[in-house]
Image (tube, rainbow, N blue to C red; front, side, top):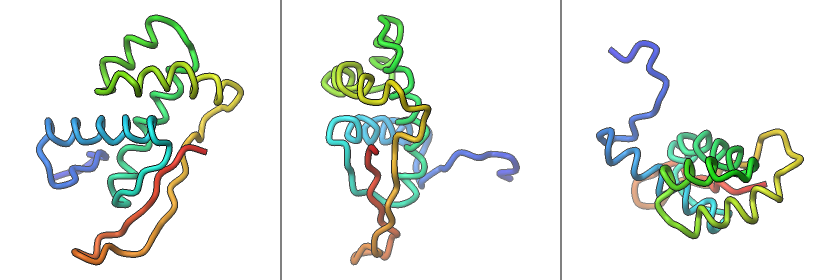
Length: 116
């Protein structure tokens, strides 16, 4: 039973699911707009919010925390240099999910997740 388990499984085991979300978070930070399924967008949103919040600190400890989670070095660099400064005065709510039509192949609900 899945009582009180709030995380989404997304049809994957724990390791592949975490790596997929880390890759998706890196892509969002690099490109600032990614088209994906609605379930993946909802699952990755808290991770992206936490990464931007920690990058606002600008400390070495925050950079090392980002390096542990994000897989691409340029995602860490952009988060620390660009996004941390951009959202310095904002108190959260860095992402927006916009719903799109269903995907033609399998009918999955699609969405665009972007940085505000």
